[in-house]
Length: 140
Length: 361
Image (cartoon, rainbow over all chains, first blue to last red):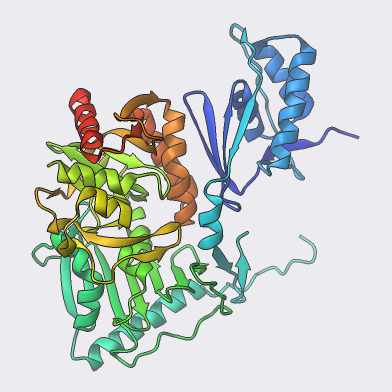
């Protein structure tokens, strides 16, 4: 059985600024900061990738032993899945994943932080999408 | 593909149809009342025409825009407003099931298509239908004599948000203050101290564009004014010494985000310079201090700046998430971000912002 491939959830918006990913979950109102080597993982996930592929890309970019990188990637993918920031890609298209070609940089474990201070607003002022049959569909 | 009809029937554009019906109802209401009034504004560098049926709607909802009034001309954007109580004209029947609004909440039913967007707020009962790319919107309330607090605090916010976004102006959850045409965006969620700091700066003789929401023009980084009112808690009114005459007659009303706030007319404050726009040189995130005597300004990363401004702008607006985040990310890449730990002394806080603006050149 082939390894599952992951991609970023369609319900989030994200930007990478100064080596940190800021992602906002439009369904829950939670937002996230991803730092350390996390943005490198995120970049690979944006094109869709499996865990071994992500590990291989990181191993080509960072100075660390394979086990350390594999463990860090595995932990981060679990956290990203639990937070609904990534989903399994059911219909993966063609992908090309480029490893690092330059000098390797020191490895820093990925750091994911979650902020929920907007949730109250979200619950007070929710938006219900109305579908073509005219029925509201709760956004969250 | 098997099982798929060769030609699919086109889906009706319900949002567009609803917009057209609401527009017709507005025209009926205007005809019944012998015509509509108009208020032409220059907002965010664009000519915006507000067409309203009935003086009560004009007085209750549109007065906070008077400082942006300009001579009549060909408008880029038009918003038409009417209510049922004074015209007898009902809006078209809803296309959505009623949504229950618990006290203190304002859930919204949203119907949208590529061309149109309809927003029906269950709490305030405000109805907005817009064709953003075409620059037109219609706004309806059941009764202009009973404007809900949320509408008075941010009049026709959804209509402005939709029309301005289509013209590259992002309604940003941020105040803006400055000096000499240059200034800073004050960012952060409700309760972070934006409004109090913005009013402290205005009272210290600085220019103020907004305390809570401003229109950010992505290309020029100009922050534009929307309304001339601010929202303050009772504690802030007292600490700033806001004169009673500047406080809205409705007094302190509960807000969605917490403590009761009153609307303050910035034009009624001595020394305050209400400006149309400021060129943004930095992002400042105020934080409430635990008793520091002096305010402290610290540089923070661009990502921290983005985390301070983007979630409350995007989560509360509920649309345009991707492009809004891109605009705000561009902002924090172009200008530095700071955290300002507020002191209990409003004058000292304003002086800290003033010094920062001076240092930024």
